[in-house]
Amino acid sequence: MIYSKITGTGSYLPEKILSNLDLEKMFETTDEWITTRTGIKERHIVSAHQYTSDLAVEASKQAIEASGIDSNKIDLIIVATTTPDKIFPSTACIVQTKLGLSLCPAFDIQAVCSGFVYALSVADKFIKTGSAKCVLVIGADTMSRITDYSDRSNAILWGDGGGAVILEASDQPGILSTHIHADGSYEKLLHVPSGVSHQKGKSTIEMQGNQVFKIAVNTLDSIVDETLEMNQLDKSDIDWLVPHQANIRILEATAKKLNMSMDRVIVTIDRHGNTSAASIPLALDTAIREHKIKRGETLLMEAFGGGFTWGSALIKY
Image 1 (spheres, rainbow, N blue to C red):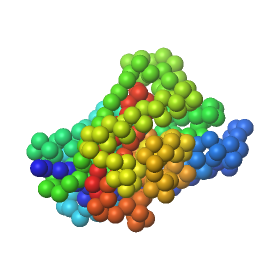
Image 2 (cartoon, rainbow, N blue to C red):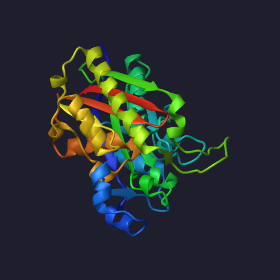
Image 3 (cartoon, rainbow, N blue to C red):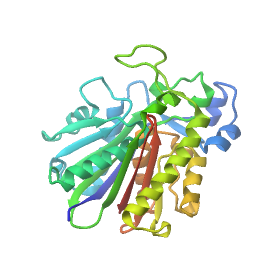
Image 4 (cartoon, helix red, strand yellow):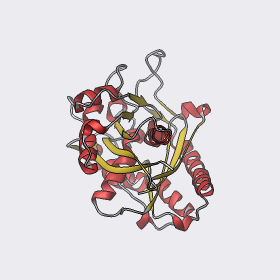
């Protein structure tokens, strides 16, 4: 059986840091209020001349180096992003050029905060069908570019960053299963009202936070059950939870569902904020480089985002 194995990870965060103390100077809020409700202490923000592709490229360089491969071995590039550099070409094509990679297929996926899990799922199918042998999978977003900093309940959440993994075909277990879902009927609970062909309303994020929170917790509960049942595993078989970093309370609720100590949950939201599609690969790379996650351990990734979209990936690292 052919598996998709993660052989290298990388991440990148812009230099500028926007702390809760900085936000206190922008609007009426406090560090304590933000931390208590979200778990966020600071987030990174791109400079005026940085773009999503720049974050993606730097994360990719790290992943390629960590994997030890010749970059010309990459035969597919998938970028999960909500904030592409341009309407077209895809950010993946821009990344391909900036990395000087060979003429392989390259395309973007848009599933907001679930984007990286969606991209992993697609890449896994390419490898398992023999259509690709080495895939660069990236999650990168510049959420600050679509954040309304006059909306304090929303502005406190978002950060910018990029994360990447190299997936290679292997006869050793890697991605064990992926599960992706969507329900577009919840569109207006979390969306950007204006777009290219629908130029009405704001071009920044609008969110009904309390409603999104309730649905997210219940939905992530169900996808945990789905993932464990599909793989005939018990909750105790999961070594690490690597969740989308949206809100510390959602992370705690999912850990409780798994009867898992928070010591076994990768938490970076305090340092990164919500970086959308970059969230999971950033958390994964951070945990690997901090020597928390080790080879042979079983990881559960799960995410929930606008759409609504949600998904999970069970991985033997």
